[in-house]
Length: 130
Image (cartoon, rainbow, N blue to C red):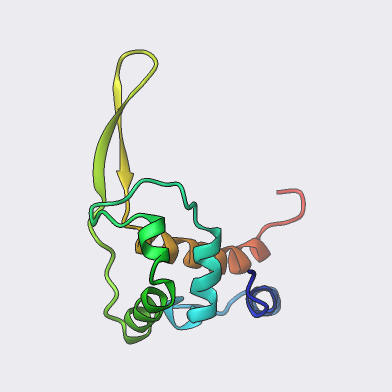
């Protein structure tokens, strides 16, 4: 289910960014609440591989509200720190290999939430023809 508060929040943030382009943000963490994390979770791929912590989307969903509350508290208090990203090598069609990173699932949610907020701000800096 979509959060009824996220879209209006993003619209307000976009309007503020358009109205005051010289405003400087030093952090997005205070702008990300539990509802926002829930929407970011909903928009995060549920089929992606587990990260270094071994937590899959299904395992995270088993205690979703508890996980989101704890994640929000870590963000709010400033103690959140992303887990190391696991590097794996995948085979390429030409026989070579290339590295990819597999972040922890909670980090994927935070990345999605930050991207959602950042898009609302940064899109105001582009003209329609960009």
